[in-house]
Length: 374
Image (cartoon, rainbow, N blue to C red; front, side):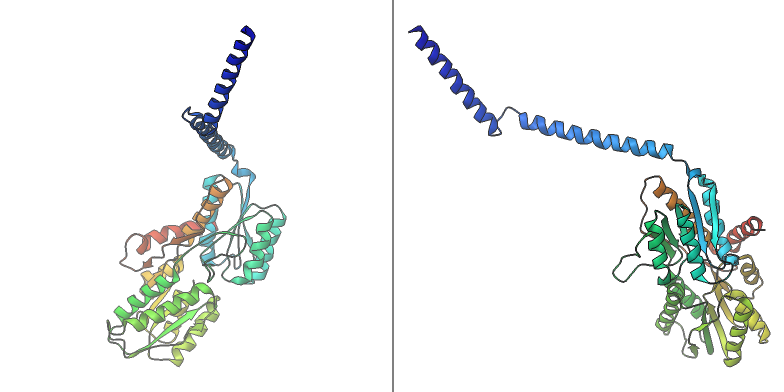
């Protein structure tokens, strides 16, 4: 009898245990699921904290002196290109990069410059500012990037029609040539309002930046006819003046001689303030008789602006874009991220302008270039 009682008690205990077990498996009220979730969250938080700590430690341990960086471009001694080089090298120095150099070519052969970029990658280079204006650079970008080189391009917009960028390009930045083409057209239209004659447009080569600037000028000019009286002014077809000063001056002189009624000129090359002003002088035009707008705030161009030979200069942010490119490379090396695209400002500089729109700001940068590369 006693034995039966013990067996009944054991059976009841087993049943109760099973019921309790089933209740718990049904996600009941004992809080075990919440506890598990809390533990999982705590584990994830801990992992995130550990990852952040590792990143911070990596950044603290980062030694820029062990990294090799370069700016690669053709026409290395061109005064405009020297401004770009200065910005890159100054940023590298400020950030602690002891192995920073200029590579490329003395002449204008971009294929030789791209070969220098390939050699830099083969030698174990880490970061590259590539000065490249069109799709001929895309194989080089992909090749050097596949070897571990971080490639950034300033000045030229390489965004494709579908919004993508060339394979291997880590980031791209530039001022908007559409905007400064518009600004130049507005400035010129205001100053030539009611006059009669022709306006010339010249480029160095056919490339995406200069094409966009002159196309924007033409589109804006046409839209302003009504805001200003431009009915007596004809905008001539775009001509290529090239990048060599003597040849470009001769080209622009020929344009003036073929169009003696010329009253305005917009050149999108870095030498265009000088080439157009000198051509005008050779053609017997007085300073200011042709309203000249050119590119880039080099020392010589600023001299012409101050002397009244040129009426305005578009100061592409050559120094700033190169400096920022080096900063972006440094950010990536340290494990950070940068925007794929960055917009920059290109102020239009006049004699009476102030700050970045004035002469003195750009005189300072030009003086630094002369001192650095003497």
